[in-house]
Image (cartoon, rainbow, N blue to C red):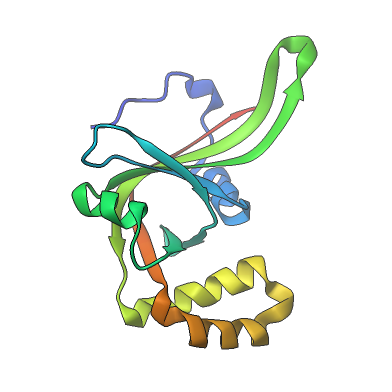
Amino acid sequence: MFQAMRRQDRMLSQAETEEILVNGVYGVLSINGDNDYAYGIPLSYVYLGSSIYFHCALEGEKLTRIGCNNKVAFCVVGEADLLPEQFSVRYKSAVIFGAASVVGEQEKTPVLMAFIEKYSRSFIEKGKEYVSTSAHRTAVVKITIEQLTGKARK
């Protein structure tokens, strides 16, 4: 179903790959749709329980495209250092293929709180307030991971 990584010598372990997902600041979501063009968009995310979550408005291009085709890719670059004398880059990245779906109300609040804990750790109480007043106008999408690979040039 998925092509094997060509450079097996650069493949990361499951633990190393998950570390990239836990510590990453943003990822790029890639979605197909009904207009024959791929759509890639950088966004904040959380990695919880072996799934990727992101939030968005209740309507818009991401949800429209996911409604047409829920198969997505998600990429996080954990590190990138130029090696100009080698005409290369030292990097670590994780790539996910999976199925995206909007979560229900019961799952939404804990996920939004995970965003607060990841991105605004010093403002947990204000974050709880923000989530309680804003969750009704926010969609949370879960990517159920079907394949996860990590790759690095060390």
